[in-house]
Length: 228
Ligand code: PMT
Image 1 (tube, helix red, strand yellow):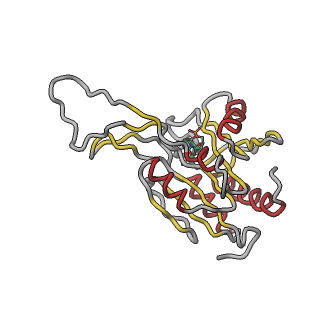
Image 2 (tube, rainbow, N blue to C red):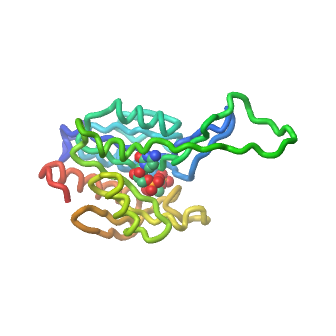
Image 3 (cartoon, rainbow, N blue to C red):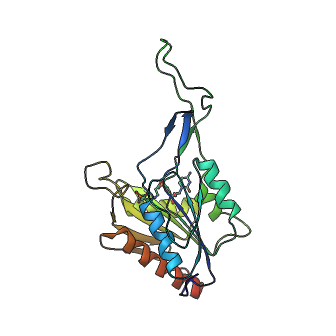
């Protein structure tokens, strides 16, 4: 490991989307590329941390100096995250599918003339909330992300309270899907760090710069064991 302000610290990062099967060939997913989460894992390793990256299916390379655990579904992601506990800091950047198909088909669904199938959905486990609310072995610092399309800070504050994490990194994904723009899939991110202490808005930056700044913040918070 490199030597730096996170030397001796264990950091876990989730990244990418999850894929929730409909049948053996189809799935529900979202536009997360893994760029932001992978950049955070890399930045934490560069500051000396022992980093595990739990990633959903992505097509970008593994960051150097990081242990990568690959998963597909939300339930697999939760199991992989729990298996890596305890850690000093956990950053939940993955865009986890909120729902999965209750009964995924074992065979490919066929057009049988009786119209489209109805997909009964059930809720996936909330990985961030599960870890943030642990009674024993909770990370010192639990950081969530909030992807919002409107009222970004207001919704992030509500999420902070509901999920029980220490910081929420709120990002505006309202332009996702438009050509050449959007946080999901794109290279840049405009975030606000929301904590019990208040809101700090950062300027628009490359995802690698957001990652470095966040990793430095985490190092400071762990050093003082004081939540910003
Ligand atoms: O991957 P990129 O293309 O670089 O895009 C980055 C990003 C937009 C995906 C990322 O910056 C981001 O915002 N990630 C969180 C996206 C999201 O799904 O937000 P949410 O509001 O649904 O969830 C809030 C928080 O709870 C997140 O920390 C999420 O990881 C976590 N969560 C949500 C649902 C669930 N079942 N389990 C979770 O852990």
